[in-house]
Length: 201
Image 1 (cartoon, rainbow, N blue to C red):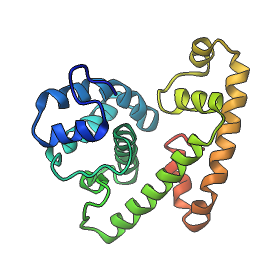
Image 2 (cartoon, rainbow, N blue to C red):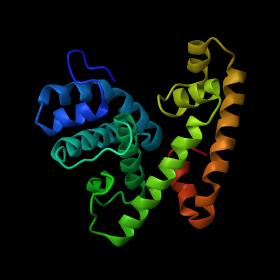
Image 3 (spheres, rainbow, N blue to C red):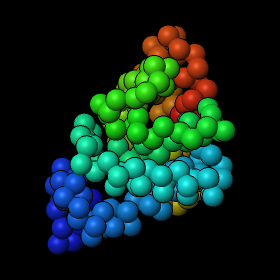
């Protein structure tokens, strides 16, 4: 992310936010807010719920700005936090999600929730590796579909390719991702459901 006149690297951005720089936080919010809502909508199917999820993610980021220690890119962190919130929405709709669990390394109060978080982060890490290992065009199509929420037709128009090519490339991407995550599905079948609602399978 490039914040004009502001820190360039993710670590610099988080350091500025940790030092109470509201301008940098506002720029970060403006940069990612809309795309994270589109991402969340793919999971919860409700614009209102998606907006609430993303607002909660940024609220937590600000409240815990001095404690968060990034172990991935800032973009990956925000997407993981949003995905995790969406999973909790489905898992416990009548219970407020424990967003404080999303900061990698933060202590949690529930053994069950802690175990789920650790599994989730491991799956997320392997998912990101699998996506990064895809052929360049295949990776681009997957990200446009799963992360930016574009339809097959929109992707085809954007990349000047046929809709059939988009479909074929997504089939390839999903097969490779399923193989990469197979070990988790054997150990904990509930992750099939969690990632089904996250549009991985």
